[in-house]
Length: 166
Image 1 (cartoon, helix red, strand yellow):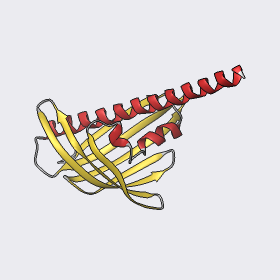
Image 2 (tube, helix red, strand yellow):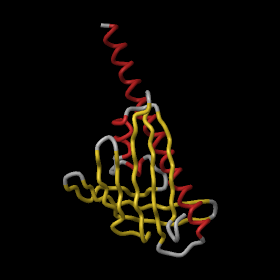
Image 3 (cartoon, helix red, strand yellow):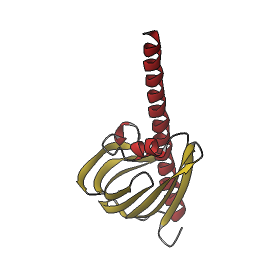
Image 4 (cartoon, helix red, strand yellow):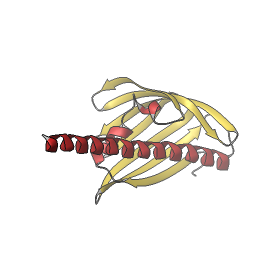
């Protein structure tokens, strides 16, 4: 924590290529289908390597429910880095950087966020709440990466079985 800023750092590794991970982390139009706290996620505009993304949903931690929405500028540096910058929403500041690093037969995802809520909440509560939501979102994205990879492998095995039978 730095002043009123809430700093969140998290990382995970997944047995997938950087492109497989990238495809899920940048699936903005489909993200509400696999991130449970999102009600809506869509690309509003695209200009070169910059996307404007709108997302809304409800964050929940125990008895606390917090509806949220944000419009963010997302800059993509394919398959290595994703930069996000809040344009509008119910945070005063939300800046994030996500790195994808090839690590043996897997990809390590390292994420850093700095957030300042618009409404005052006790610092410790805010950090716990935001960190919980981010961890949940990234866990669900990790699960989607694994699900998509499994589907591709099953389809490939099925094609090979059909080809071998011919």
